[in-house]
Amino acid sequence: MTPRTRVPRPALVALGAGMFAVALGTVATSTAAWTDPGRFAVEASTGEWGAPTNELGECEVLQLPGPEPVPDSYCTITTLDVRNVYPGDGTDIMEIHAEFEASHGPVGYVYWFRVDASAAEDGPDWGQQMPEDWNWDTSATLNVDSYDPVPGYRCDSLPIVEGIAKPTENPRFTIMLAEDVDAPAANNRNCEPPP
View 1 (tube, rainbow, N blue to C red):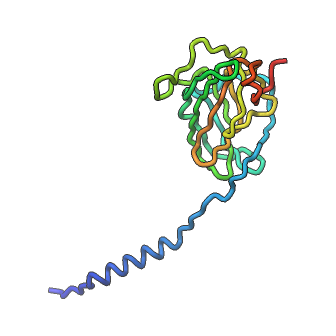
View 2 (cartoon, helix red, strand yellow; view 1 turned 135 degrees about the horizontal axis):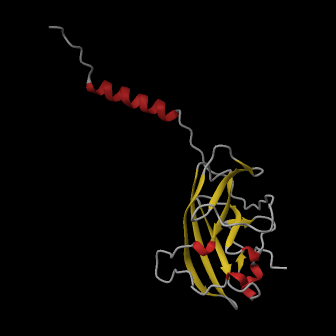
View 3 (cartoon, rainbow, N blue to C red; view 1 turned 90 degrees about the vertical axis):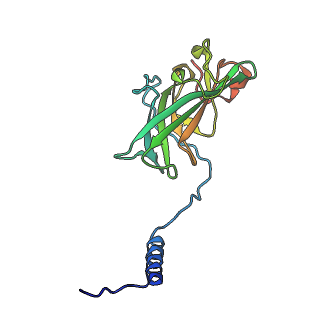
C-alpha cells in the first residue's frame, strides 16, 4: 500500500483564493465616460423608402466616428409596440417603443433602422393600442433624444420611419408621432413636410 500525502485544507483554500485573485486581476473593467449628446448624419439613398424586410423592421450596427457599418455584425428589431396615445396641441400624439438586439455597443456605436410604424403591436398595458383611424397621410415624426432621422427623411414617408438610433445604455429607441403635421404640436417635427 502506498502512503498518500494529504494537503491541509487551509492550504487548499489559500491556493484557490490566490488563483481567483490572480484571475480576477487579469480582467479589466471599464465604464462609459462619454455622455455628450450628439447628432449624426448618413447619406440618404432617395426620398422614398420601401417597407422593412422583416416583420418588425431592420437595423444595422454603425461604429463611431463616421458612422461606418461594422463588418460581420448583426442587429435585429425585437419589439415594436405602442406605449401611449394622448391628445396634444391640436392633434393626437402617439409614442412607439422599439427594442433591438445587436452584436456591438451601445458605447461607441449607433444603429441605422427602418421600421413600419403601422405594424406596431399593442403595448403591455390598457390604453396602449394603435388607433384604428390614425391618419398616416397627415402625420409627422417628432424630435426625441433617442434617434435622429436620416437626412432628407420626409413626413410623407410614414408609416415607414428611418433613422439613426443613439441608445446610451439599453438597446431601444422611441418614435413620437403627431397625427396632424400642421398642428402646433407638430412644430417640433423631425421630418420634412410634404412639398
